[in-house]
Length: 345
Image (tube, rainbow, N blue to C red):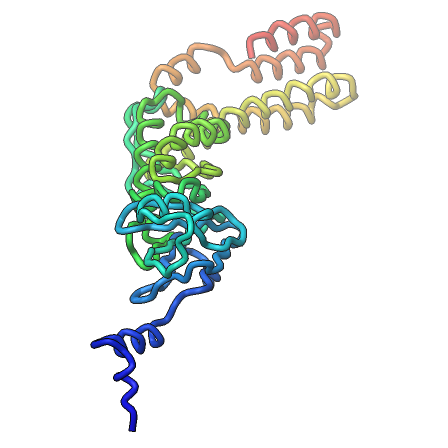
């Protein structure tokens, strides 16, 4: 029986069998199976890439060849046949000649360039600012942003490295830190009063995006959008502002009650017996006004002292109405006195 190994030099048969057993890569591509993966290393451990192999880079992807830690050729979306022509940088690194057609070793990384939308940001702790109206206050802010990989080689060098894959969630903390720092710097100056911040949110969004653009680009990323959705105060300060709004409403109601009584006087004076009804309306209106006035006066002693020093205009109008009804005053005299009193209200 003939020994097949007798036809090969010493060790030659084993080398030939090893060659037959070795697996070569002839198709390189990445099918994204789930959202959230930013970088993916093509599985090529202990395998070599066949010269002439097919490389497919899908839309919203880029591929990068890495040789012993050195960044080589970068491929945008398309289908390529791998050769010295399509791998010029790798050819230079490995000193291939133009006719090189042997299998070769190289790491291949795919990067997703899809826009990563609806990324949430928020201030983990309140930011202390010096407000123009309220002094030193603490506020929080929330919103969204979106980004994508713009420079895969920079992203590989500074972020993902040789990991088998790198995900959005792993990058999330670093990006939020960038946003929080920018927010603290922007609001910390207290240039805009808190009560004006709501109408300035679009302006804040544009300004913060401009400030964050270069910081994202340092990681090979492009910040596509940045939105400030809400700016809020601590609960205790918000409660104070609500009470202040209620007190302002009390003042508006008092003015409204005064206005209603004033408008009712001419109509009542023109009708027989109308001034009697006016007396009831005046009394009710004055009572409402007095109740609100007392609530407001309780806020300061000066207001109460001033209220006592002046005679109630509603009482004067009631007296004038009585004089008109009894014929002591003429209609012209009544109107003149009424106009004089109304100017003081």
